[in-house]
Image (cartoon, rainbow, N blue to C red; front, side, top):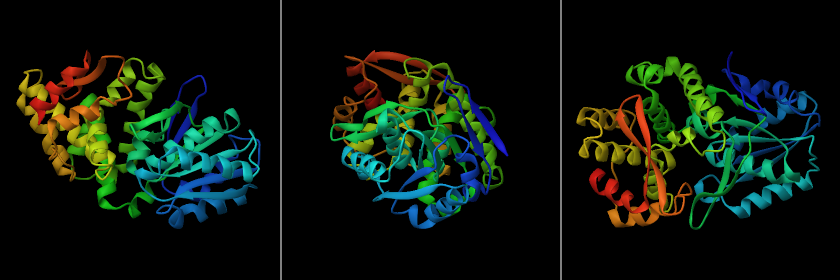
Length: 350
């Protein structure tokens, strides 16, 4: 059993072990005093795993309900958030009960926000079923839905009470979705190097998957515990995201998050090399490792359109935005720059 303690004021444990799905009730009953649970999932994941989670919860004495939304980023909206809260109310959930988020990043984000808002706060157990959610969105307390003007613009910081990562569920993940998770893994390697870089540079990823998830969660823990509310060091985790979110929005979310982050990270890397902030070898390494895991390194979009969409970045503060720039692998830095300067990075990186 691998475990990572998230040492915040309202701390929690991330458990990483194969087979956790069928024993989740034993862990969930320790984080709440009530005996009702609503499982929140989507149309892809629920048919595969919801019954197994419900059976485990029932064995531990829970009454369960299941709320599902259509799979896909377009379902992460305020309308489905309200429907989810209504379902919780209809199911009789009280503040002593629990919401169980079973799915990828769309579900972990939306169910987490529902937990933050329902009766002003209810326990949330995250059971991520995608690599991206395991290494990123299920940990750290960022919860949100999308607005028409941008991604994740309607949300709250709300930490889960428990995270259960069962890597066996990744066997049913489409290869393109596994690749999307690798984009966030590569981001950690660029930020910190170390063990994550060693693993992704090797050819035995399947044999080291639980270790890789643990190492990524440890890195995210460091940033979250130093800067829970994303005003300082945690902004390192936005590497590739300012331009990546613009790519997602410009594609009307047909380009998924991981692919957009990969392209955004490569654009930033090429811009840094062009501006002599990092070596061309560093930029080339990032492109090569993204390509190794079947991720895009560029996009066929107009620079002006990407710049326009980047202006909706929720991390923007007035006419300033913080960019994560690269010196070399394991050595990145933050630069607060004028919004207009994003155009320069896009131009040089494209």
